[in-house]
Length: 406
Ligand code: ADP
Ligand code: ASP
Ligand code: MG
Image (tube, rainbow, N blue to C red; front, side):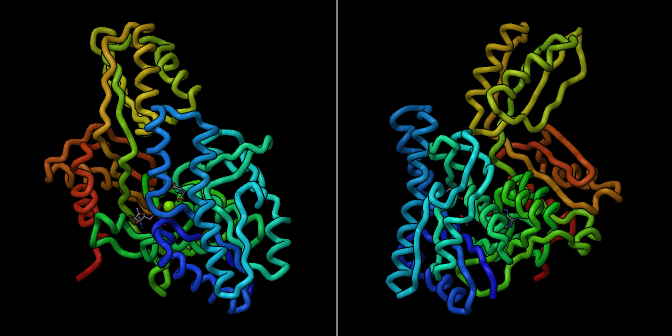
């Protein structure tokens, strides 16, 4: 018996039947004598539909109003679940982000949680209620509604679990755990029983969207165990915990992919001090995060410079760089959205050589061209054409001995 935070993702609350299924699970946990706080996502596809509606009005909707709109997705499911629980004769109450005192900064669309005042949630819990909180949303100090970035209900859940000092945060989703590659594209991916926060941070930062990266950061900081599991089965899922000695013995422990990147190249840039600052300062000032950067060798005092940005920010970044190119006299700015990043990750790579050559030769055998490479001691990433993503993930998974046996 304890305090359990459960988060249900979009597919788990996609329709009324599934909301009833969630209510049953929540009620079971409650009837076992636990205090239960539930965090919900919007129904699958609803956030996309809302964004779509907004962009029918204007290509770049007002960010404040967009957050007011997007927050309605989670408001709907929170109310529907609380209603269902009450109908089953369980005391339940729904709360929006601001009622649950989820205080964020004022970065609309990608706000960070600053603090959570737990007294409102705890008052309801102490009075014997199941509390259902709308995920993905909070409010800034002025009371504006904010949202936490795509996939943000994971972060709502773990942050609330940390603030309430919950015993565990259970993340219910459409797969029964964290796998060695996205099971949606790699059928031989293996379920991982336990994974460390660091390893999961590594995977999430390289595209494994099963957990939003910030949620793992919170879990690590406050030492909250996360159990990722399916809302459609009773099977044990994956525990995300502080230490996991087992994985250190694997050289490569997972293969990830990320289709949310786009590539920008500035052609024939003068190779002089200060040029890189001119190219990247306006990008960072507008809040765009640059991931990989390569600069070609100098030819006649000039060089090409290529970097990647999130696809969502591609058109803004292109606009910025066209202006920069004029200022610094670069010949042209080229953009490519049809790229993907595939990565092999593993803390065990620290002590092994030869991982890069296996990765490159495996991709070469399939005739997959590598456009950019970046490495750290615990991962190697390659940018390739987007259409080869699934193939690349599968062949790398096999090459590093990760396949599930028949
Ligand atoms: P939810 O709506 O429940 O938050 P998401 O779609 O955000 O669900 O995350 C679950 C999805 O993450 C899975 O359906 C799967 O396709 C994807 N995924 C990517 N990488 C992995 C991985 N390594 N292990 C498990 N799932 C992964
Ligand atoms: N509904 C939001 C999204 O689709 C948040 C979430 O599901 O975690 O990104
Ligand atoms: Mg998600």
